[in-house]
Amino acid sequence: MQLKFDKERVMAVVAHPDDAELLCAGTLARAKADGAEIAVCVLCQGDKGQSDPPLEDLGQVRSAEMSAAGKVLGAELYEAGFLDGELLDAYQQRLILIEIFRKFRPTLVLAHSRKDYHPDHQQASALAEAASWFCASDGHPTPSPAMQAGPPDLWWMDTINMNQFDPGFFIDVSDHLELKQQMLACHKSQLARGADADFSPLADLMRAQFTARGNQAGVHAAEAFQLHLAWKRASAW
Image (cartoon, rainbow, N blue to C red; front, side, top):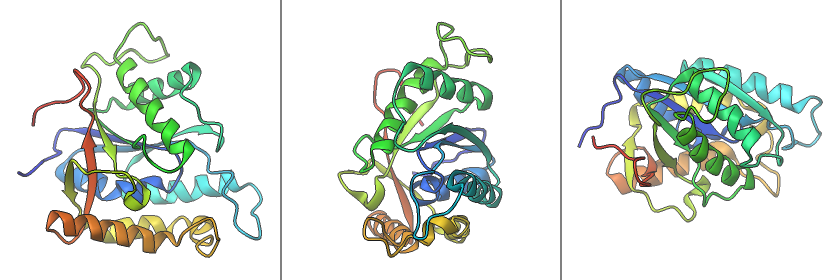
């Protein structure tokens, strides 16, 4: 089976500025190469994950790093601006993401799995699911009109370090590894935390994950996903 992304509009909704690099940047790059329009929506500022010594204005530093990575990918970038640890699947936050969806008009959304390790990832998952449904409803008004084409398809992304995630399918990203690595290299503030006891060397983690998923799929490197199989939320290819 060969999946093509041409004519699609693909948006990744992630909790923190470096999550897309780890979990779906190869898929976004492949979609762009196929002719798709691509975007990344980052919900949190990344303002709490401090290095030692701490950085002043960490949220602004991470925003600049995220912008640099987005330019490498060639994606539209949306920042919801929530603070780390304060992300909730609440109605006012849903409305912010609904408006972002209506601005970009995705046909496919890539979102965190509910089983991922980080509380912000778990809330981002619930928020993306709800907002990707209600963005097509006139009953949830925002400045932009509801998406008349209907809700976008939704794929759950792999979890960090592959914990508690049974892949439904794989995307071969072997041709886009250099880009993934270039994007991750933009996040210098996070790479500096590799030796922290409560953190991990991100480049090693990313490499181990795309290699393991590639081995499972019989290719050099892959990213793993699950279909969101709720009624009226999955499409036939």
